[in-house]
Length: 549
Image (cartoon, rainbow, N blue to C red; front, side, top):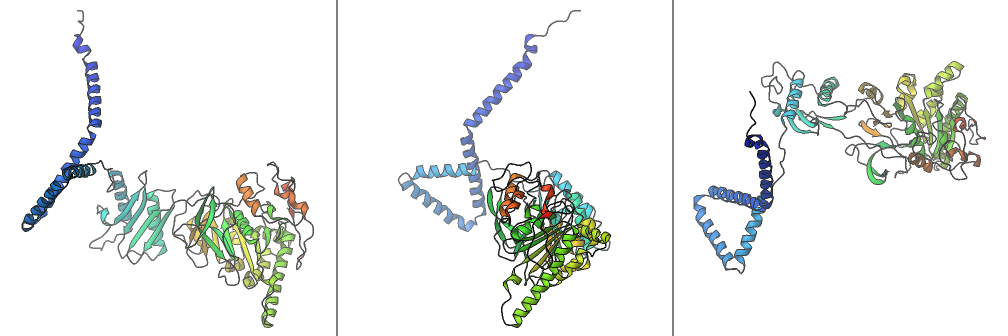
């Protein structure tokens, strides 16, 4: 049996319906655009009328008569004033348009996904913040999370960025282990990979958790606004310190909160210990300290790793020596011990005679040691004394003699540091990714934040004496002779270096393979970076000789 074709109206009806819907939708949109002012004014008039009706209902009956008389008097005055009715109409339309405008929707609470996250966090805290004998527990399975969670905020991904938790008074918030369990749980449930700050209010039984923004890494080596005896170790959070210094961050100038370390005879933390992982930025920290110390003092550098990280300092004014070998390091440290004793004797004689201390005893002397434990292993194998033994006099009496010792070491060799170094280095810095237990072992206490696994070079924590633990970002001070150093950072470091003492050493300012420098700085292979040798107890330095190792 042959099929009959469908009627034309049925075959083309769907296309006509779709076209009709499109035409109707377009006409409705056009009408809405044209009539939008009228719709806005109508909405505003309804709101004004509703407000007037509510105020009339809230007015007591004995006051309604005077109110009507006042309104009638106002209407009469407006009617008698020239152009009064027109101005009143314009004012009414303006008020209606303002009241009828479309306001953006303001979020007044968490959405369903955020509520689910808060409920999950509440249930996870129940085993830690509840007690079976509590008649009215704040934390109980299936309890009200809104009663203990306040001031909560979320990021674009729905993760918690700020939260205030009220906990019961019987929780042992004075025990570090109990605090650590809660902080670890909140860190895991709120999202890893971010740095959280935990602020415990023991008096009010409240814990505030918030996500900290990353410290800026755009601040490079530069001349900081400080006085002699002050060294900028790095930069931290704005609410952690009270002092800011003007800095250049990229192409902008801003005031950055700085961690300032004060040295000298009145310093309570005259010596510093920096510990980190390989590539964490401890050498960059020592270069930054050396560049800040050279305008006002003398610098002696001992490099145990022998990688030539401080070749840019060789031969500079104020740099007494840069030693990479064991023999030169022992001779330099022996001279430093004798120099400390000489300064003490000279200052004591001057005070006994009623005279001020000599100028050469007041000029700061900085001893920078990078990985001294490596030299200690070499000395033990060669039957020589440990270089750390020669640091006892500078460490114990350096504050009175204006001698400052800065030691940088890695975590894997931290146990090899001598007791004298550990005792007298009260200013501490930890750089690079490390566990909270490692930070507490160096700084003496754990930080109030959660360390993140991936950090840029120079990022860590600092603690000066018994002060608080501060987040730290060291100014970018890379080796200018490293091929991986950018041109901007290389020029920033070279511009801060003093002039060289000899014309033959000017060639060290050019990195092999980079753009040629002016005529005073010819190329030189940095693989044979020279080291200045010095006899103990003298201030004269012979010509450069090749570095050992």
